[in-house]
Image 1 (cartoon, rainbow, N blue to C red):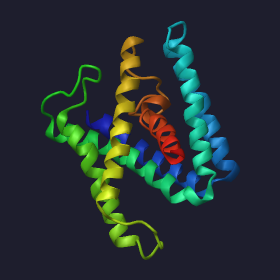
Image 2 (tube, helix red, strand yellow):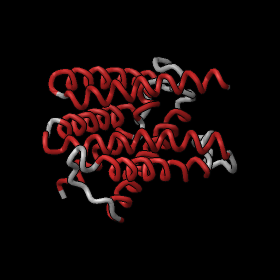
Image 3 (cartoon, rainbow, N blue to C red):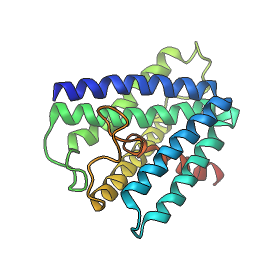
Image 4 (cartoon, helix red, strand yellow):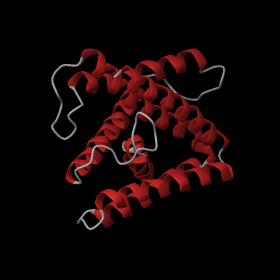
Length: 212
């Protein structure tokens, strides 16, 4: 168990650093990166759902989701918003994992047996706590035009909720396909879809929300 947590922690740190670097740099590096991630995601989806009735809807949704990622990041005025969304999704996942492992307790749903109510609470607490702290200490340094108020807290909770919903949706399809992980490319995590399951639901939502 400790070895698995160590692998998961190390791979998480590497993924977070690399992902944020690529997002900040943007340009062709970012475009190449999301195309690569899309191809891996499509391959994993193909392997787990080929010949099932949800195969083509899933392909369409992945293409829509990655298009949302592309358009939101390449809008230069939205870079801070993009990084904030990415951070919320990542911290939601980490908070759920840490609180779930530490506090344990009742299971949340049979769809994803490892998820607990403690993890659900942690998925909200960690992004709220860390992002609020970041704004308090670094707002002036980075000249951030964001208000730390109830609206920001609500925004975090909405994004976190959608990310957790996406996690459960992919878990549901994994159960239908009778697999535990979508792949084995990321040590301690599984496949690409295992890692971005929440994000692929969040970004289309954010883009649609921006158009309303």
